[in-house]
Each structure stands twice: as C-alpha cells, then as structure tokens.
Length: 346
Ligand code: MRU
Image (cartoon, rainbow, N blue to C red):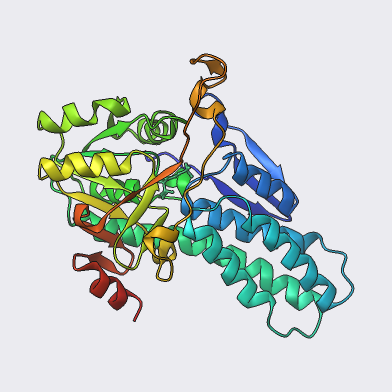
C-alpha cells in the first residue's frame, strides 16, 4: 500500500501547521503558527524552506493576519495585511515564489470589499487556493518531466526539491515520482547539500519513506560519480529563473551543471511558472548570505576553529548554456530560452 504523502504545511482553522524541517529526519514535529510573525520566523530559520513552500507559507501567514484580526473597518484590516506582507517579504531574498505569493495576496486584499468579513474570507480563500494549486502544478510538472526519463535511469538531484520544498509532491522529485508511478525503474543519487544537508536529511528522508531507490553522496563526490558514468540525468529545482534562462538554485548547483556539461549528461531544471522572474537581470539577483555558524558547525557540532573567516552564500547561478531544458507545468522549455520562456507567459 502507498504511504500517506508527507504534508509540509497545512491550514487548520486559524492555525498554520508547519512541519519543522530542521528536526528531520530525527523527529516529525509540527509547529502551530497563529501569527504572520511566527510564519516569518519559520521561513527565516528554515523550519520551512524550498521556494514554492515559502511562497505558500507567506500566503498562509497573511491569511493568519486576516483570520485573527479584530479590525473594525476594511481599511484597518488592509493596513494589518500590508504590515504582515511586509514582515513576510523581508524573510529571505532569493526565491521568487515568496514575492510572487505575496504580490498575488496583495492583488486580492487591495481590491474593494463591502465589509471586513468578505475581505477576510477572500484572503483566506486565496491563500488556500495557492496551496492547493501548488500540488496540482507539481503533478503537472511531474507528468511533463517524466517524458524525459527512461526506464532504468539513474538521476542525480541536489538539495531538496521534493514534497517538503513545496505544498506537496515536489518539482524535481515530482518528476522522479511521476516516472516511478508510470512504472519506470529509477535510481536516485542525492547529494548531501552542505551546509544545511537538505539532500541527506530531507531528500533521502522522502525517498526512503516512499521506497524509491536512493544513494547518498557527499557534495564533493559529484565529479567522480558523473565521470564514472554512474549518472544518466540530473534534475534539480530552482529558486528563481530569469527570462534568459539563468537558473538560481542551491549553492553547488552550478558546479554540478559544469561537470554535467563536460560529460554531456542532460541537466534539467523543474520549476513552476511562479519561480520565473522576467524582470531582474542576472547582475541584480540577490543571493542570500546566511550565518557563518551554518558552515562552522554541523547540526550544532563545531568543525572549524573559532575565528575562522567563512563564506556562506545559500544559492548560485547556473548560466543558460548549461541547462538542457526547463520542465514547467505548461510543458518543457528548450533553448533558446529568451524566446521560449517569453512564449510560456503569452
Ligand atoms: O535554502 P533552501 O533549502 O530553501 O533552498 C532550496 C532549494 O534551493 C531548492 O532546490 C529550490 O527551492 C527548489 S524547491 C522545489
């Protein structure tokens, strides 16, 4: 029997249930957030993470502000929702989906409403719609991407672009899930993904949980594993995709794409349209720099001397010439990206 799917985030009558991903794979514990501030804290601390998931969390955070508001006028409530949006906006800078979700919520709550209750209902319904749509979109990405996967393939993935990084099903792992559901025999190689180990802790957790064949490697084994012919395809997710096909994703993605290109292994990116940013140019992308302690420690244990200098960029940028195709809910996009990404949005 198929196991119940992991639910990283849910809404239950004025409470946002967030699976605390910092505790995985040791403990399955849900945070019960009742304020946008608590949701913002969860995003910052990466208790919830992954581009689509933090977009969904931000939308539900705004829904919490609406649900618990004591405002007596539409204007007063709108001010509270703007404040909540602002707090959530400032949590993490790189994933486009966060800003996409907040902008979508704003486009609802800045409309005219006859009374406070109708505004509250519209805001909560929109957030739930974003959550439900995300799962459907991922299933479409999965079905589209599964066409690229052959029976017997070994697929390397980086970080976690699975159910845990979305509202459910996943993007890169969604493609793998869909291929497995079609009856294809698939093996996965997961990179551990330092510094926060999303590959080891989350991707391996999801795949082991579902009985999909997975092998864990450390990040520095990628070159060896690919050069030995142990990988047929690479699929990763994305935090932001620019109009010319630059892909911003977890630190280490660029290195993998370079090795894949040298060895002529297809490098696929799976992401929803809400990850695309048609406005920002590559030099203006903000790459999040996180706390040095994430590098000097592993799960609380110090591994480097006190006082050492540290770099901790959370994401890197893969240029379009290293990307074989981008898998979206509207189909698979091939180069030339500038032209074909534009068509996606027409
Ligand atoms: O820092 P994280 O864990 O939020 O980074 C996540 C990633 O880089 C994922 O690959 C990306 O968000 C795609 S998730 C479907």
